[in-house]
Image (tube, rainbow, N blue to C red; front, side):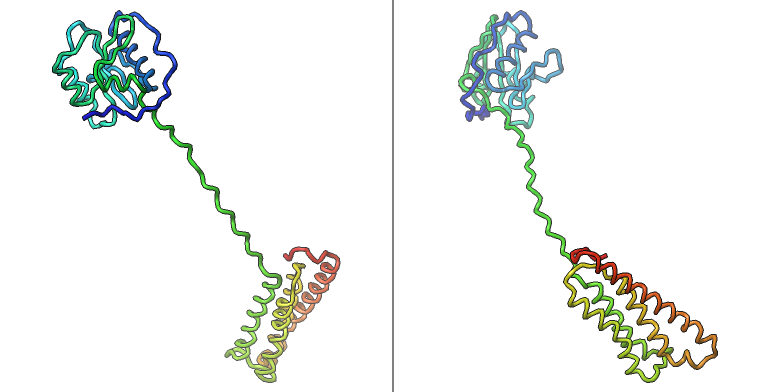
Length: 287
């Protein structure tokens, strides 16, 4: 089951690793790591002295084992390297020795796709079997670069829907229309002279509000006038309730006072707003 990658890039570092004298097992491991980087395993690093479980050089794409011994490498050493890979079957396996390989080791390497290399004491490297020759001919693929996150441009925000000029007046007019239609018929209200006339009187102000709201095109300030018209509608409701006129003076005094105050406030608000909007440009936003 060969796992050595054949889809390797054609570009490789221009020069092989510098020659070094191999006089210890640590130097042998560092030499193997340098050759693995030359073959394209760019993150290969030696791990001398650790509890490696049969692994002396590690890379994201490969595992390497290095033997600094005079005896030929047998099948058990390769089996330990194969077992150290575990479930990471996508990783290449490379074995390095300064001596030779037994026939059983070469057979096991061919069955499991382990690349066998022999190194000289001057740091040179020789491919022993077919998987090793494929690696030496073209470096292993470098890990794909993690693509930078692509952020889709946020969809343009829908323009805020502007409120139609005069909407506030129309809403207020509709509320007062409901009041004019239902209040005169309530149990605590005795229309004077009759319900129809009182209703018509109370509908004057909402009709003005609705009509002006429909016709309005500019955004000039209107709220003082609207408030003034609302205050004008209150005295109509008070004065047309006959129950207020059947009591004593104290019963009439409160609504009469509120009527005068409402009329005064309505007049002042409307006059003030008329002067203010006359001096302001027609495009002034409503408030």
